[in-house]
Image (cartoon, rainbow, N blue to C red; front, side, top):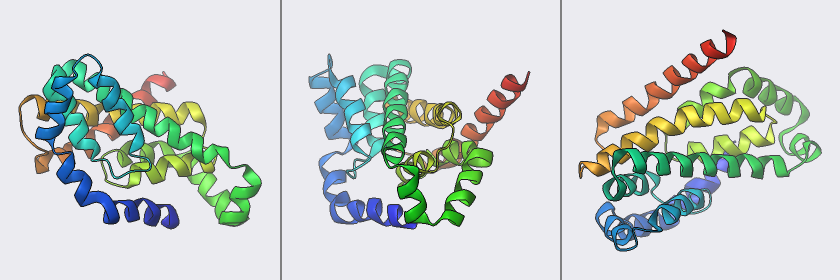
Length: 201
């Protein structure tokens, strides 16, 4: 997990400033507005590309809100975030269990697998609000064989508040207020709790 974090953080350290200067909310909003008919697809593509490149995902979500409004922008932002998470999970699942056990060690593989089966949903949902961690967590969830259905539900619970929050910020022409960070941490946990209660009912 530390190795994956260093890998993704390295991308930010090398190219993050360039990407943030090039893809500011104003610049991206202008580009999206100029190609409004297919900008939603470009937005989803950028959010998926965030797995490998230091794309400022919150800026992309805000720009989508600025162009399409809170509702449509939020849906597109959520879809992009969910798709990115599923791709990350798929990357982790691509490596077979033998590789995972050899890389992590059998003991750590069993411990990590047990953690993701028991509490992974909370980790996946909450991680969507934190830089770098979403990519790491989704890859680890796949590598450690977290049940896919449970993963997707948690992923949606974490991605939806983020998508609509930043779409709302973009629609109002604002940029990432500090309170948004706390809001986006709490809401995924509440949503997951609600889903857990419904599933048990």
